[in-house]
Amino acid sequence: MLANSNAFLRQKNLFGGEWVDADGGETIDVNNPATGEIIGTVPNCGKAETARAIDAAAEAFLTFRKTTALERSKMLRRLHDAIMDNQETLAQLLTSEQGKSLVEARGEVGMSAGYVLWYAEEARRVYGDIVPAPWADRRIMVTKQPVGVIAAITPWNFPSSMLARKIGPAIAAGCTSVIKPATQTPYSALAWGLLAEEAGVPRGVVNIVTGSASEIGGEITRNPKVKKVTFTGSTAVGKLLLKQCAGTVKKVSMELGGNAPFIVFNDADVDRAVEGAIAAKFRNSGQTCVCTNRFYVQSKVYGKFVEKLAAAAADLKVGNGAEDGTQQGPLIDLRAVETVESMIEDATRKGGKVVTGGKRHALGGSFFEPTVIADAKPRMRFTREEIFGPIAPVYKFKTEEEAIELANNTEYGLAAYFYTQDLGRMYRVSEALEYGLVGVNEGVITTVEAPFGGFKESGLGREGGHQGIEDYLEAKYVCVGGLGM
Ligand code: NAP
Image (cartoon, rainbow, N blue to C red; front, side, top):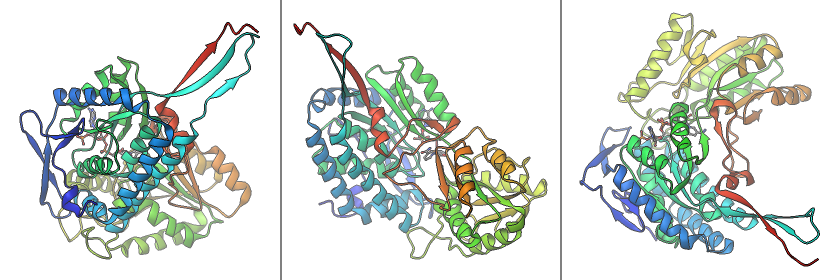
């Protein structure tokens, strides 16, 4: 058993079962965003090391593809157990590099284990088809095969669970992988290497490389041995990777940015809506792709909602995520704080009213006060831009049609939420929303059993659910003829 969090603080990369440094020995510092302390370093790798990691994955694929679904399922079950046996130490590691509260970090690690268990189960249900042939002496089979080497690039906001949604189905399908985690949160990803070893996942099936994003991304997208790229991150980087992947026509899955609307109708249970709003807005300090970006509240309940939301936001305990009772940790870095500040400045200049918060927290560093802004207007920046911080702008609307139009008026289409007690409206609005995930009277809806992914510029493909393994499989049609019938 892996004993403590130091055992997970792996400061090397994993290629073909060997823990290695960058060729030139260069390293990058990793900070704790709550304290500013350097908690360790990771190798600063580039193109050459990435090519070697890809070679290791390609070699491992030759044998891994021949394992049975049952063997891979058992491997994933052991991986699930290894994660759960170490949930607390993995959560502490996650909090130390990412900043979120320990409660949220435990939840994320539990969710990672949940994805792995789900794909342990799905591994055994990758069915093909036998299709009636139009010829008497031939038979048609459609089988599913692993795509091969996949490359996974992940963000800093959920450094463990965003990888679980990729590693789980990849192993289940029989693919090998090269992983490039976010530079600010590499340890939760490197821990997957140790956990995979502990679970008996063969050498070379999971390879992890840290360092220069453009060099690693360049090699991953150029190298013909990589058959698929799965990316979670910003829409801007996603578009760049899509272009780069065109050269070798790779399969791609993209989990990109969001701009979630949260609609509260006059007939809503306002207290329930406020409870959902706090979770949908301030979880992970507002740094999730499904975080509410825009609150739309109908005229009759507008005042009441703003007042209650502001009171609940002001009550949130801001602090070091590692301390008991902390509900909101720091933002990832000072650049994020500056972005949030500039959005508040833009809003107040255009008539927005700060009802609570609005400035850096007394704790200093990258801590920021949970903020509610009333009288939000379409011309304010957060109407179009992803906030990625603890600001809740509240807009007023009059009719259902107007709310739907405002909610859909964005190039994003990841998550949307609305609160109503009217059954007809529940169906009308959920069908009209151009979003991949819709929460009705619920503010947190992600679960391993359901597909996660966006419409429009929020992405391509789905992760989770039975759909999440499809992107790791190729369908092959085999026609068997000359049967003498
Ligand atoms: P990001 O800046 O796009 O970075 C994501 C990952 O891409 C990091 O590992 C980053 O590496 C890497 N990267 C950056 N430039 C690259 C390049 N030229 N080539 C290859 N890789 C490159 O996003 P982020 O700030 O980490 O994460 C926040 C974003 O992710 C938000 O937009 C959020 O909505 C989105 N997100 C979406 C989902 C979803 O499921 N739809 C889930 C979570 C987050 P470095 O760290 O080394 O720069």
